[in-house]
Length: 235
Ligand code: C5P
Image (tube, rainbow, N blue to C red; front, side, top):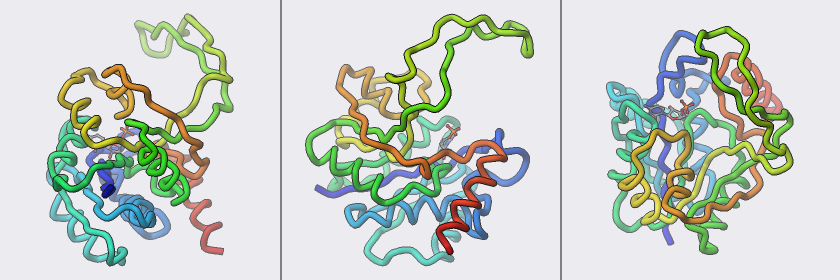
């Protein structure tokens, strides 16, 4: 079974504030995307990484991959992305050679995921799960609200799901390739993760333990945390 990783990196990263596309911003002096690609290539099981670049940034991303040291045993491909994350993942899937039967989808915005998490996801797919997500229990209680008609107005709470049964889901998410391709062909709704498309096919998605360091760099404070995690690793 050969494993490839698709890394969607085509988002603007608006919530992070003004600047370059999020994946191209530096973390410890190295673009976030390069950290994410290295995190995938760190797994001995991963032999191909497909990076989905900003639509007008494929040449720039190709240049970045060439300029940074990456493992020799891994192949790299760059394809231009789309308007939504889903479309970007689809374009990455379209570029996969036929001989890959396990696919990881990993956000460029999760640059620090440890290799043990990557390997645990791959292992669960190898053992037969069609879809696997790494996830953590929540620290916060979560409430479902009725979104305010006027932004800034107080929002009524609709429900409080039992926290012990909730998980915050990370990436890489791992899939049997045929299943993920079918999910992308079948499900048209706008979703925020790939596994939910597989759920909509009626298949069971399983959870393996995620890792605190696999957090998503979304807001400015996340960059501060990511820099601190990197600095600690370099000690
Ligand atoms: O917006 P969000 O944080 O959910 O984005 C998750 C990942 O999807 C990021 O790595 C981002 O670059 C990627 N993405 C993409 N194409 C888009 C939008 C987001 O590849 N059109």
